[in-house]
Amino acid sequence: MGEVTAAIFRDGEVIDRPALDASMPQYDESAFVWIEALDPVDSDFTVLQERFGLHSLAVKDSMSRAQVPKVDVYGDQIFVVLKLARLEGDEIKYAGIDAFLSRRHIITVRHGDNAGYVDAREKLRSGSRPQPDFILHAVMDFVVNSYFPVVEMVEDEMVSLEQHFLDSFLDRDQITRLFRLRREAIHLQHVLARMADVCGKLANLEVPCIGTEAKPYFRDVQDRLVRLNTMTGGLIEVMRAVFEASYLLEQQRQGITTRQLAAWAAIRFKKLSSL
Image (cartoon, rainbow, N blue to C red; front, side):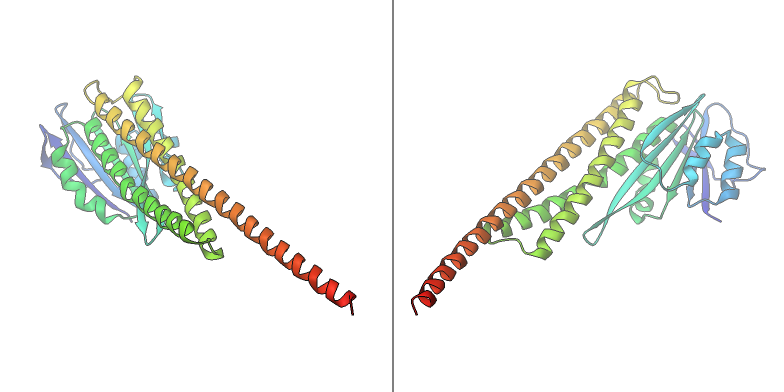
């Protein structure tokens, strides 16, 4: 069974932390509930779907970890898929955060634990306005903040390879490292672009559950994602330029070596012919 918790809010304060079962109390129009689920199992989704009227397609998507960032509209509710990035050594790992949203509830589903999210949870609660759409913004803001150390890592790796290239030729291991880094950066760029598209829809379209007051906040997140996407695209171009320059210099070096060998062979042949 997954870890599922519930908190009912009114006027920005938690007024109850009920169990998520059939006896869960009803609450009036002035309150809303935030459900947080970590790696929920089928039975957890069944309870959530019955209790909050979640669309079966959204539930099916949330049960899959292969989803890309997106926003789907189902009547008066929306379903949002987010991708959290984190570093494990020099590798980029991704974890999903899904959100089911209506005017009176927000359900966040995390696939894969993340200590940073747990540490930030109380800050998300206290720093958000007391509405589901502002909590969604706070979660998205946390997700976008996770990209910055990842982009910085890619940039640092690229600077290191670029400096080595200026000093000497890249060896086979460094070429392999460059290709791996470029592949990781391209994947990250795809995630950033899709995340920016999600924020753009929430900021600019008439989407249920997203109030007018919240739209500028999603637009601000979108602007940061666009900047990160541009930075990542620039790094990818630098990687391509470094590889191409390294390849051309290697070809030139091999050409010089070949000509030297050919000249040596010609001299050797001439000497042998004169014997």
